[in-house]
Length: 190
Image (spheres, rainbow, N blue to C red):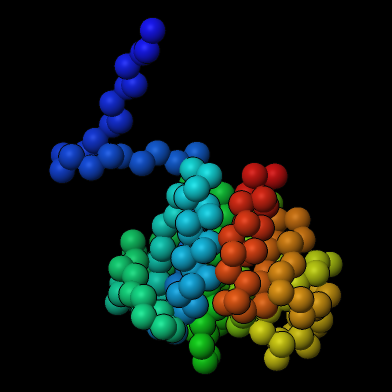
């Protein structure tokens, strides 16, 4: 005897309401972020019922990717705290990354680190982690020109495609997308 499946909850527009077990904060630079790795990271988390909120460091809520993607951010960094989030991902980008010198990002990273929450980045986003002081004693990877900065921050820079050291997940570059997404899921679940 078959039982009827319950109807999913829908919003006023008839769209299915998604419910997530937890949420991760993605911090995007205004332009040049790694489109492909961002897609892998977010979809990997969504596949295991972990939602995300994307914010930018600028007033303009439209972030433009390195290749073609444009993301309408859910808001700006102003007023964000780690309350309600189980992790933070600082996106790497082409050129100078404005997130690395943003004190709001450093504060969020320190807060996440103190609570043992997921922290992730790729490429030049690693500099935000080193400046915030959340990599001491951990293996990390990222843009090769950040090897000295990582060592000065007390980390062991490996230059490998991916490093997952406890709740901190770092990737060399955008080519690490699928592995980065899988490592985020593993770290978020532990």
